[in-house]
Amino acid sequence: MSLVTTRAVILQTYRYSETSKILRLMTYESGPCSALARGALRAKSRFGGLLEPFIEGDATFYAKPGRDLHTLSNFELVRSRRGLDKSVELFTIASVLCEVVMRLAPEQKDRELYAELAHGLDALHERVGTDDIVGALGHLWRLVGALGFRPELSGCVGCHRPLTDGPATFDFPAGGLRCLACGPGGPGLEAGEVAELQALAGSGDRKHGGARPVATTRARPAGAGRHGRWLAEFIQHHLAEGTRLKSLRFLARLG
Image 1 (cartoon, rainbow, N blue to C red):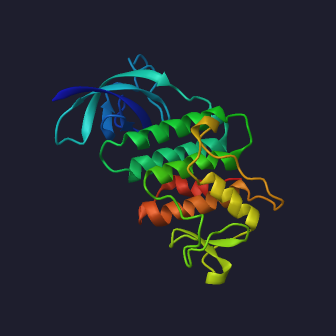
Image 2: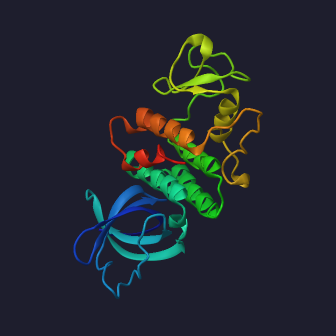
């Protein structure tokens, strides 16, 4: 048994007994793992009510090779991100970020994925009090990209011709946009919606909140509801692979 200290984000918590919790963590040094926080629910717990989803800190736990559940020894707060629950939409997006990592990330160290998760949660927290929910979804697209599933949006998935000014359809099974000449492949997007989606799901720019500014066009942009449904469908097809993610149904109802 060894004592490990690593930066970690709490993805989810589960009641284990009258006094304890099980935490699902994304750690910087070890990737996803679980830890038992004994006494966390006691009134005078040494954890002081810190152990909640979205919180980031330095976790110390006793790790034993071959065991899936470690024992948490200490947790030093780094970022609380409290206030996300003031926005149903931002809380939903943050919950999807955490559930995607918890349920679908490989059980191995992935510092790029950790950084994308932490950055996305920070950016969502900074958006509390704003109404740019569509822009907030860009952070979830970035996480999808970090997992290796960025959609094909610059060219048609059928004929591979560039998609510039025209409308398209979102072919979820094929993994991207399809021009109208190649036939229907899913929900239709107007030209302005195509440009908006390309901006949101592109590589992004961390200096500007983690997602590229949404392109302005004369066409009416898609609302958060349509963008949420597109994301939920894409994740279900390409990442979940039959796994039911509870948070996706809420993502599909944004706006």
